[in-house]
Image (cartoon, rainbow, N blue to C red):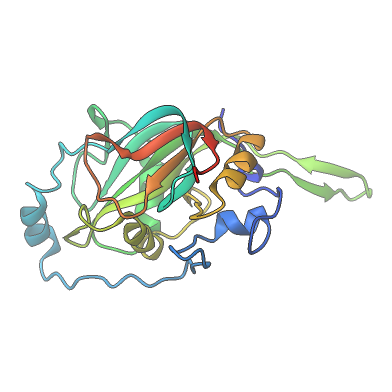
Length: 254
């Protein structure tokens, strides 16, 4: 079962620039400065979305495109030029908006997913077409709230489990392929295109203090973390050292 919302955005040991909650909500640029989630997305003016875009993309980003695969390693020294984010438990998918069927594509090709969640993703996407990489997270539970009833008795409101989509990469938007765009820039485009909501989450990340944040995430319930080269291109269906799933992150070598 994945961590609850309070775990993902929970309170932990403060990192540089504020609480752990603030750090996970607010991404950073390569200098370590906080980056606003309110970046606008400069949408390309494409005259014919239904024909021109689909025709131009069918060979570059066709329905047979697969997610990039991370390489799994037990431990690695903390590298420079990388971001760190939590590894979600769930089904890895590419969500295709405005491209017709299939709506969800996994490692093995077209895969099923809840229509209601797909419609929620489309509603939260400020674009005509997009291909978004992320995870369908099962059994998500919102943070419990402490409330008081009419008799003055305190109780904890429990929320039922549901499925959400946790997004972390953007391969195409409004006819513009982003495969060769550096990772950090793709993430900034994603923040401008996809609005977080009850059913859609933007995966938090940091660009420095990786070991401290990794320890915080593990203490909060995540079993592993992912480090990614922030200048890397997207490699559909391939496995390379640009994305590493780690159990242990050692101190950087002098």
